[in-house]
Image (cartoon, rainbow, N blue to C red; front, side, top):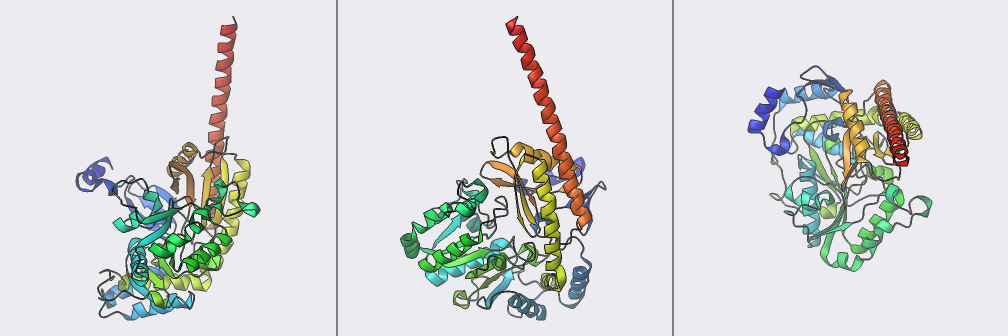
Length: 441
């Protein structure tokens, strides 16, 4: 692999260099690298591979489509495009009745949403959240709180609200006063004057699987109505099954003005979409049609994906979710370094803390590396300077046996870490005692 990595370094830009051995095959939740090592993929690659590798039904549909029609431009459309449109309309609120499928990534779908809101309201400024992540085009990085510290991004027209981080809030639970919303409701007059929209991730996966209470989303809807601005739900990470529902808006029972979707929509194939109320259908031809958007091959993958969810896939997720919760709570009870387990469906965040309940990035990194060595792949979330949260977001088809293996590996890793830490403390006490005796002598 060192020879091959040398080739990569010679030609690839530094931001897209691989940091692990090449993958050569995969089936379901298991991937295999060039050395024959297998991994249980608990992060769905880039949090997008909802039905795992080489899904039989999707592969068959894709092969049929390739032999039938390779590509269709915006001026023609295709039969599979209309089939997918009708599928999406059947699983979303009736008020969201316009869709643009000419997108290929979460970034382009979110660009689509922001453009529509700006044109409709005739205003430029945007409300976002600290630590949010909405994509990697220049505009989406500008409005993402994740990149707040990057000097080359002008964020002067973006208002960043506080994170709804219940675990780190003194007033969470029954005593919640929604302090995280104070800065928003204090600026209503400003928002009415200069702002076109608020864009939020209903559940903030990259920021550490931050799951606001339902009342939070009700208040956000109230704020946007009060200010006459668009509420945009970035459902790139939360759509299509991971929550045991089609979307987070189903879970929260709140209807936004615009919804963006991607990742799980294509089950591994490049496609995204922007769904909106009719009043936001304001962009004309030439203002947002990405060349490879609505690609027929990706469309058929999306159709098969939705069929799976409609025919028992969501029920299967909810059943496995209950099982995961039981296993995760057992881990929390057994290991004091786990400060919080939070999750819905098959999306969980595991937050590691020190003895004072402060973020412990060291433990998170240790667990991540040990699991990687043991053939289990997760992701680390970063909130500010703290990388202390592991994400668990496997393909929806993960088996209970695979879940068991993951949980047992986490338990073993933490037990070993605690043993090592305990031995260090014993050695330190002995050393301190010896030093004390020498000093006393």
